[in-house]
Image (tube, rainbow, N blue to C red):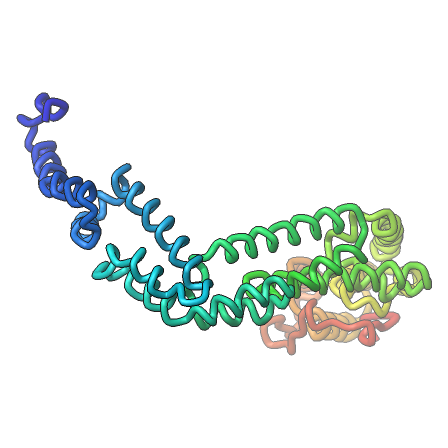
Length: 352
């Protein structure tokens, strides 16, 4: 109240002050119930006023609950320990959020025993199936240990992957695949490792088509020694092919890209190179004042194979300036696309 004294006269603040004070009207009762160990009443007020759950008092209550639950767990694992467990948990009866946990604990002691056995035997598939069917198991210390073990496996697998020890990484991941929370991520990681191993095998066996397909599929491979070498080779050849394309030499372009012709991930590069090459052929045809019908046919072929981009539109503008009587319209032509282009569509001249 003293802290709020300077703000009471401010209407916009007063409403907030009243709301806060109203929230804490029952806090003394909450504190008293906690001190008297009347837990159902204390938790009841905390549910009505969720802000109480941020208090030290509530945290103390939760700490007591965890200790009581842990002790009850211990008793349920002992012969004829159910009565002792009931006695320990008696103060928490009537607390809605604790009731199911208590019931599960008292009625499913056998489940907990099976859970512990599955962990001891490292049968994690059964352990997680039991957790799925009986969520109360997540309250046990064994569950926390299980999840910490999973985190350790994951961290170790990442270290092995980073160091290039894929064999050890796969061992860790195979164990981790039984942990339901990691199943999907493990599948992805294992698939990537298997792809990397296939990549290195392809390089070793000089299967460049397969190697480049993998290299373009997984970026991490480009950081490997083999990956850098292959990428440097490709960049060098791409530059050479670009020179031939600028000259309109399909033969020159093809000779350079021939070793890569079955690498599907390179098809867009090939389409771009050949498209450029054919535009140069069309430009040369216009400069040489070739027959209008021949150039029109070349433009039709280009659009059919590659679709319409800026370079063919610019070329068409130049064409119409030199052949103003042409009835050709780009909009009316059958159109392909760069993404649909395939090496089988390569021709020596776009004019043919």
